[in-house]
Length: 61
Image 1 (cartoon, rainbow, N blue to C red):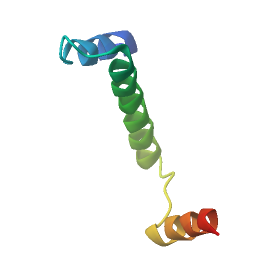
Image 2: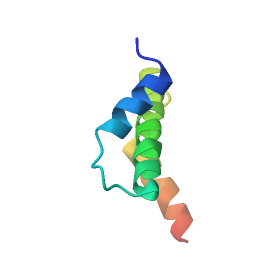
Image 3: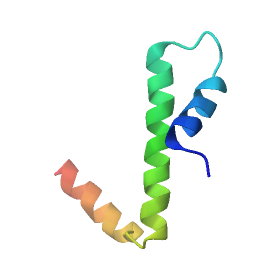
């Protein structure tokens, strides 16, 4: 199993050489958010589409 540092190195190395620091940070943050989401899903920490729609509607009003 790769360490977090190894995984982040792999992601950084896969980016174009002319990537800006902001682009690299966004890519790393995106990876971390996806991993958290997958972990939540695997642990059953999910809500229905209907509940999500209700929550989004509450932000609009």
